[in-house]
Image (cartoon, rainbow, N blue to C red; front, top):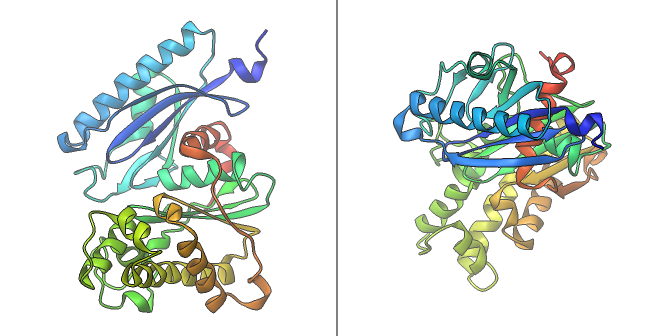
Length: 315
């Protein structure tokens, strides 16, 4: 016989610029029935919403057929999200016209379930804090380094959203190593422009290197001095930002995730060296570890946020 935690499920959504995944998440954190569809960003918000509604409807039908009782929907979405309303307040061109989309209302109107929405990296961080490397810790800082650089600070089981729901935009911290480097946000000198996956590749190419992608740069770091120098410089800049955040936030644990975090020991060594440069002695021994919740982290975090929403509201 199924336990109450197994029968009582949440619908969870991980909505990014390229793909959207919808699944059922049980009360004990089991993920079932993943359904991944193209986000349809090129068609604008209308196409994105239509695809999401269809996926939610199909997933709800599967849950009902399995005897489950979905109670809420949790959505982790690209963009800055006003979690008090579920509205996208700001977004990049990854989904053209995405700002202004009211995802909270969409879930309630489409399938009749209470819906709570947060940023996708905030969802990732919350999932990692509850079910991954941060489990059992009182506070955790997640830094996700991939196509962009984002973050989440989780304190006593709650993700800190900030006054504008924009907390932990780690990629937009200025770093001296990126003084003349443009950032995707339109500013110059931010970490993301230098140390994200595209930033590392661009730095390698500016220095005369030839590579198809960031993975190739990382793979060459063992034999190509230029690749190693670029990877080290970019990773050290990431570490310096993490060191500064340790001084400000004093988390119990730092978790690094994203595709760039899989670049190998040279990257990790340089990150740790950067942390050592700027972290105060008092916080310099804070553990820094890899993420462990896997590709479902954002789904888990979105579901947890929806289930515990009354306890998640933060300034």
